[in-house]
Structures are given as C-alpha cells and as structure tokens.
Image (cartoon, rainbow, N blue to C red; front, side, top):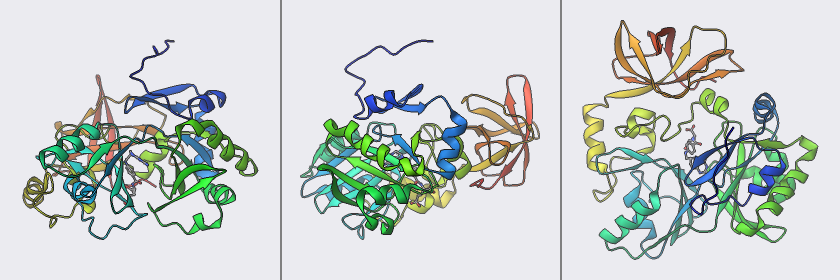
Length: 367
Ligand code: THG
C-alpha cells in the first residue's frame, strides 16, 4: 500500500495517538484532516454500533466560531432557517446555501451563548465564507476556528456509558441540545447528536492537549458495555438515510432536492443568503429529488462511488450517489438523486460499465 506524506496542511486530531493504539487501518480526508474510517473488522464495528456502543474520532467536524455582538445576526444571514427561537445550549441542523440557493454545507449550528455560535461543519471551508460575508456586511463579529474537537459515543448503550462518566443528567438531553461541563478537569460540551440513528452523544473537547486522556476516560468507562472503536459508518448511515454533503450532493444541489426542505424557512429576512433563490426554487419545484434505491442483485456488490447513471426505460433520470451492502436488509442499497418525474415504486437500472443492474426506487430511510 501507500502512506501519507506528513505536512503542516494536514492538521492532527487530538485523538490521533489513541486511534493508532486502537489499531486504526484506514483514513479519509475531511476539512484538511484525517478521519479514521476503519479498524480492520468492519463486521464487528457495524454490530457494535447497532447493538452496543462505539467510540469515534470525529475531530474533523471542525467548528467555525462566530463571536461578538452581531454573531446571531451573522448566523441567521448564513442559515436559511429561523433561528429567532434558538436558545443557548440548543443545536439545529441547517442548510448553508450560496446566493443561488445551492447547498454549500450542512452543519449543526450550536448556540453557545447570546454572542457566540459554532457551526459544526461538513467538508467545505465555511471559515472563508463566514469571514467574507461578515466583512461585506460590516458586522461586529469575529470568525475563528477554536480549539474544539468532537469525539462521538454512538449506539444503544451510549446513554449508559456517557451517564457513567458525566452523570444521569445526560439521559435527559434533548436531540441536538448540549451542555458545557468538565470531565476530570477537561473542558467539554456534551451534546445529544452524532452521525448515526442509533442514539448517541458527541463530546466536544475544548482543549486539544487532552485528547488522549479524554479518549481513555471513555474507553475505560465503557468497558462494562464492551465499548470499542468505530467511525461514521457508511452502512448504517445509508440504511438510516443520513446525508453526506459532497458525497450525495454536487455543485447544483439545493436543499429541497436532498430532503432538507424541512430545515428551510422561506419567511426569514431577505438578508439571508440564498433565500430569494430558495423561494423561487420552491415555487417552481426542484428539478430533482432524493429516493432510496434497492438493487435486485442479492450478493454484495461494490460499485465504488462514481455517481453511476440511473436509467428508466433506457433514458437517464439521475445518479446513484452512494451504495452499500446492507447487513440488516441483506440487499444492495444506495441513494438516488433523480428527476422529479421518478417516484418510489419505479423500476430502473443502475449502469456499471457495460452492466445494467436492475433496481427499484423506494422511500427513505431504508430502516
Ligand atoms: N456532528 C457534528 N458535526 C457534523 C456532523 C455531525 N458536521 C458535519 C456533518 N455531521 C453535518 N451533517 C449532518 C447531517 C445529518 C445530521 C447531522 C449532521 C443528522 N440528521 C438527522 C436526520 O437527518 O435524520 C436529524 C436531523 C434533525 O432531525 O434535525 O443527525 O454528525 N458535530
């Protein structure tokens, strides 16, 4: 195989040494960092997430911090979702769009206090974007990347593990809400969130020098529940219908096409970036929409991630943006970004080089 050349451009995760000790085997890049994507036993890692509890280095989910008297105003200008009722300690999933209404990131927005917000970003540089907009609109706000790195604890047993470390109050945390606290003197924010539908928490480490200590605290505390390493799991997230910005989207994708319409409020102020375009798109109806796709082929296929064409009656209707063998469904499944004319129930084919694989379009989530 190959190795990765060290560079100051690749920022290290505070949990990097811990993941090496856990036996990490694979990485992907995200926000100019390496994110673990496998520890050598995909089967065990999957079932640990579905049935047990799994510990993830997701420090790549960087925070873009907006701080100052106009922080709330900038957050609202960047996000076409009504934030007027967002409370300190609350998080919201938002669709950051450009002026054409095209989705350029899908972060979780966290309101840290009246004058401080974090955008916990997907894999595109929102720091540049937020800084440019703040300057252009002459806002009193500082845009920075703070020393904050999330670690996720995911799976049905995550409540027990996190409660054993932090206390039973974590069991009452509402979805996307968070609270700042400290764990053996390490400053953290504990949030009910994470990129899986198996329940879980994200522990936002606020002192990068303490990554290995924090990792070990949860590793030790989780032993009674057989905690082990994992990562944002491709199979689980496809089964659950979770969106991957940049994977399932292209440079023309708007939020309505990828099931994010419910996070867009069209009556927010006209100063919100992209809102006029979004109103037009909504009125005219988006060109495409996202459906699930189930292939007839009953043994695991690996089609890669090449946005294979999808055909109906020989005509191209869109693309397969991801695919995976589902262990729970024992089927090959994926997301289809297809013409509005297609519907759940339609028969189609996926094109893989010379082969055509029969499939059916379905509603999501799969499970
Ligand atoms: N956690 C944190 N930061 C992140 C992610 C995360 N940044 C990058 C990326 N993930 C952002 N994207 C998503 C996409 C989906 C969800 C969360 C972050 C998600 N969606 C649920 C759904 O679609 O069913 C729930 C949304 C809702 O009901 O509001 O959880 O994972 N820190």
